[in-house]
Length: 370
Image (cartoon, rainbow, N blue to C red; front, side, top):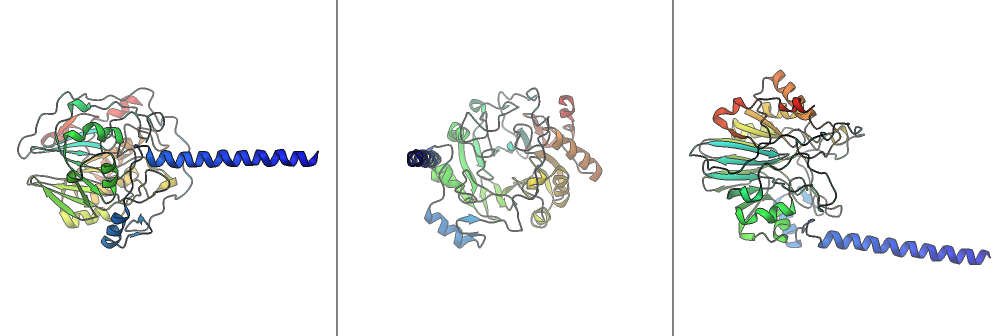
């Protein structure tokens, strides 16, 4: 009797083991071949990374300053993480071309931004899908509709991707708009993802921190940031992350990308002088990962460090990826900006901000959606 029980237990253990192995293999194959995850840098690319910087070793990029991903116990989920109703947006039917010397900023929600610098259209971290996820049936869901439909997207001169996280680099969005994009600018390694999705290599410009390129009279410089990358748990930090500094003859715009607060913002001022508009990571923060994103007060201090004429807080308003209330970031940014006398613009999603009138976009509109 005891022997039979042992045999049954052994068979059961074998079945559990086989099922576990099959599930693990299935998960690995899914990650490897499902297009939403994207490709990873080749061995040849890794050798190039290692020659370019000492901050790349063992197939991973490192931050230029001390960084710890998990810094403590994360906060409890706030009951207002997601608003009860979808947020108000300004629908855009058509995007008119800006005139010579003009600067227009259209915040499309979260960190998606359409800049118009003269006749050039510059798109940053676009995500137009319903979820920021490798799959369409799971992951953080939008609570604000995209203000600009794919068919209404104007021709894009440059599309910048700050890093490979799903709320910044989206498979379906890239597939839908690639035909409208003339050039891509991406940090090292992100090109592998784009090429795997069918984007032509001839359109992709890869850069390391502080490298720059001039396209059609606009200079783009990849700026350092304190963050991390990874689209699956097996390839963490295999690609680089960063922000972008954009200059033409008339204006300077700085997008921080996802980053924790550190001395980079003072360095931005030392290298570039005053900035007209700073688009700063201001949300999805938590004490559990305090060095990964800026808290609102830090974003305001970063604008002061960079000597930015105007601050527009981004990385909020569409997805909840942290535990704070959806409207906490702009409220805290507005309070800190007032205390530090930093010029703050808070456009609604989809509003077209003409830099000549940027001071008019100071509505605390989120208060109406408490």
